[in-house]
Length: 331
Image 1 (tube, rainbow, N blue to C red):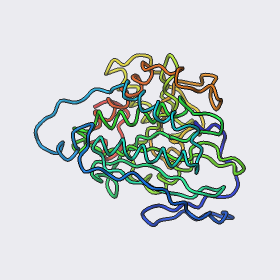
Image 2 (image 1 turned 90 degrees about the horizontal axis):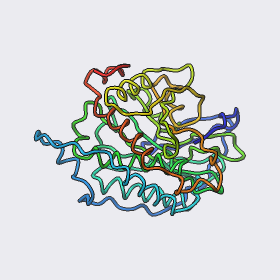
Image 3 (image 1 turned 135 degrees about the horizontal axis):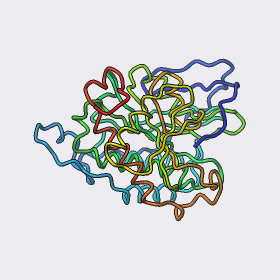
Image 4 (image 1 turned 90 degrees about the vertical axis):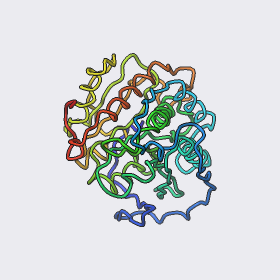
């Protein structure tokens, strides 16, 4: 989770995969892109039924959120090591997420961008066979996978990334029929970039492209260690997603969910500043943030479960009316 404000300094020049770019003043000349092999998309998913099958009118039994799966994915990210933006470990993580999301039946693409200190990173974007990717209303649920130097970032933020992948499994049978298409995103380069005063680069790239048609954006960031899950809105911005998530928690009987308001400290900020209802799920600071002590043994599957259940209940409860603008309450 990034905690420093975006400093007024060099702007980041980012190249979107769709050919668009964000101009910036005094931007450094981007370093040549580094070619890294990506994991090919498999034709037959091995973990969950394909989303194409879910388009059948036959009603399917919804799958529950699996906290053990979320923890397993978290462990695999931690095993990669320190995942600073632009590093070999960053690219290895992108490849792993491509593999995992494709196995679960999602259509996966990379959205590469340049880093202010040189090199590249990318967002990993999963959609239901492209549904919602290019036009129409969409909801975005994402988690950053990078770390600051010197930590494997189990809670910050392998935990949130594990939850997003487990959501992909839970939604695989029904994602093509949800009232509002959902994009599941692994964000690159969320953490503060040394020597530039810039953070949340990946979410800035996606928000620049999608904010004008995003119904709501939920960031899942540090959700593995704490007695409550906080639904955090960006202070003095649109409260509708926070209100909706609190209403969903009450209606679904999900315990230990509390409301909070903070500054621009996670990937929801890029969307909130563009007037999108946005929030992030967070179990609070555990004293290990950005230190070598942020390791897997401190995570609790119960906390992962609470975040996953809430996100899943919210996505399943979206209605056609929400396509015209997120309702603050259930129904």
